[in-house]
Image (tube, rainbow, N blue to C red):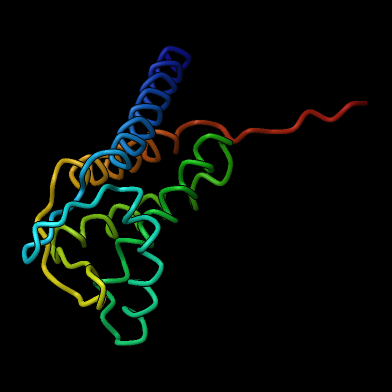
Length: 158
């Protein structure tokens, strides 16, 4: 019974991992936000590039909620690597949880620095933002299932 349970968890973990990666990549090419003032639409990859500026100004002005979403991308990338390599399960779970909190913080406080003057304005979420959040939730679920999997071990030649 344990072997069957292991294979089922392994299949679920892998399926969630690849589906989360697919949704993340899909979120990069879809329109993620729309400016409430100008109607400007930005795709996920554009937000990924300008997110570093927003994070810097978020920390300088102590507006942590504006800095967290961009950190979500970094932490999600780290989690993808940890799950794929099947190492450091506890750190993987912690990073997946932090990544999910970061992405959900955007839905709680949908602000972005847009325009030539880079003012922090409220934005409307679109399909790309929702795909991004769903990807982080699926990644967290994959990390939960990965807790039961053994760590990858290196075989030593004797």
